[in-house]
Image (cartoon, rainbow, N blue to C red; front, top):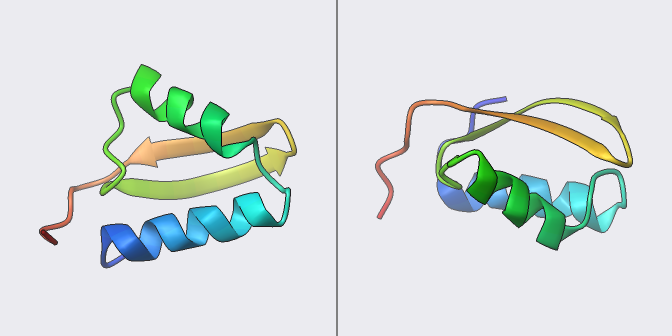
Length: 64
């Protein structure tokens, strides 16, 4: 899934977290920081369960 804006990507991620499918928001933020992934350049690749969320970086958006 490729998102047209940071807001769109974060909205989708928040929806997943709200449904309890992925890890908690705090753990997600730590994961992103650890892997130096920009929030504006996310693609959710695969969700394997409650404790695992795989993310890869994609080309950054130009939305200020």
